[in-house]
Image (cartoon, rainbow, N blue to C red; front, side, top):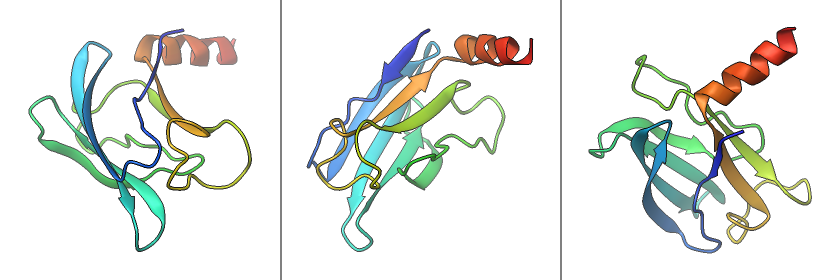
Length: 116
């Protein structure tokens, strides 16, 4: 299974990076919101055109709900709390909480296996 872990850093309030997912490059801004005490992510294409804004990183979050077909990564993101049940805090990204991406072919194979 091809899974990519986003390169998140604990305790860094503003993070910007690009990652290749399913053969295309996407940009990410990950920001700590001091007012409400949670993390949000913005998703961009390779040229930093905004695709999805201010999605909260929380347990069970679906980060890539596409509004325009073909613009978003075709696989699936998963927010995983590796220990504890609390929502991600300021120092938790990349340590207690990770965000992974499973490519589209593996998601399709997994779903086909579940349907069989």
